[in-house]
Length: 95
Image (cartoon, rainbow, N blue to C red):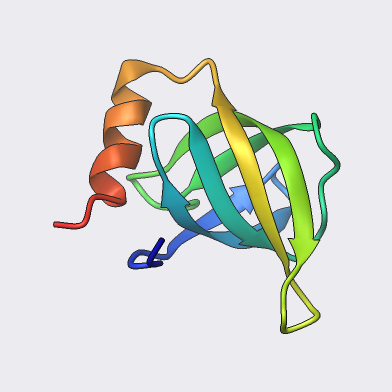
């Protein structure tokens, strides 16, 4: 899957990262910290902007990236409102 869009995120109000892809069920992002499977997280996309919105996810797992400083995290979207789902799908649509 090509990473065509990189959206700044804030994870749990503390950690900064970047979302690299999403569909109707999963959010894939890079973060400075690993999150164990099943951990609930609040992820804010476009933090500190008028477009900011928060989604709830549960980590599926994390893997250290080749840069050895960030983690590749996959998470399942939970309790996603229709408006947030639409925003995610539009942000990551290829065109």
